[in-house]
Amino acid sequence: MLAIILIGGKGSRLRPFTCDRPKPLLPLVNRPFLEYQFDLLKAHGIRDVVLCTSYMPAPFKRLLGDGRRLGLRIRYAHERRPLGTGGAVKNCERLIDGPFLVFNGDILSSLDLTGFLRSHRRDRADASIALTRVKDPTLYGLVETDPGGRVRNFVEKPSWDEIRTNTINAGAYIFEPGVLGLIPEGTAHSLERGLFPRLLELRRRLFGYVASGYWMDIGTVEKYLQVHLDIMSGACRPAAGKAAPARKPLGQSGLACGRGVRLGREITWPLDGGQAVLGEGVAVGDFAKFTGHVCVGPRCVIGRGAQLEDCVVLKGTRIGPGATLRRCLVGEGCRIGANASIAAGGAVAGGSVVGPYSVL
Ligand code: GDD
Ligand code: MG
Image (cartoon, rainbow, N blue to C red):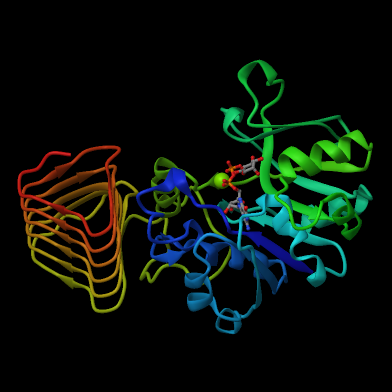
């Protein structure tokens, strides 16, 4: 079965981290995010992937190539001008020869694809939408179904007065090839605002499949941090794949180190179920303290006595002695000065230099 992954968005809500890299390639616990989706596909026997690119296509090709290294067959369908979620799918038409899967490229989930497919077939659906439950549906596509699971209403980014349920579009679909005829060619089109309402108007068989288990859209800075914490705490257990380089499985307290990590004396490691994940070649100075869940990217240097709590530091960053970081994200190749402090909610752009004693 073919899986189409939509990865052409600009990831604007994830700036500054998406200024120089597309969202699906951002590291998540030291692995490119997209690899988690690949693991999920492979866990359900799906190896044929089409990536719909628009914003920054080059890094995908460079990193993933034809997919052989990952045990996949990866092809690319590029849009010179973004065609929207529906136009992107239409742009793959020549590669489609049967029912196919479509994924948003920024979803981390433990969706049971095999169960999803079974339910699609049982319902004899033209299209099926995976659903999940959230507290605030206004940020998503609201999907109302009848007791048999048939979709009755789809409202993208509803206002609060339109909300009558908490099930939303989880960003994963199964389509029969026939629905492609409803998407116009060579022009921008949205699945959410165009195709789904149209299928309902035409009374075609559109079904929802309520997925249990973990689900998160990593599309904002806050959620990007949260998803890191959830993986390290074990709240999210991604599909079996090559986990971040670790001595212990993630989700156990303590320390998980990549190759070539150098550790100083008297370092305090997380207790009470917390975990520090240190990428390859990280150096940690004496008396540093890690609390909660902390992910440090490859080749970072953590200064003497620095304190890190529930935070993420990307590749090649140097944290000065005595600096403190709490519930924040620091991009690649930054220099954080001695005794600087970055508070909850901080998002430091890659390459930034933060002077000593700065308070952010
Ligand atoms: N190729 C291509 N071309 N991909 C695109 C384009 C485009 O023009 N526009 C968006 N995408 C990709 C994005 O890269 C992302 O992976 C996916 O489509 C969804 O876009 P987002 O910008 O992340 O949408 P959203 O998060 O606001 O809402 C969508 O996802 C929710 C679940 O997280 C909708 O599908 C909602 O209905 C859904 O609930
Ligand atoms: Mg999104």
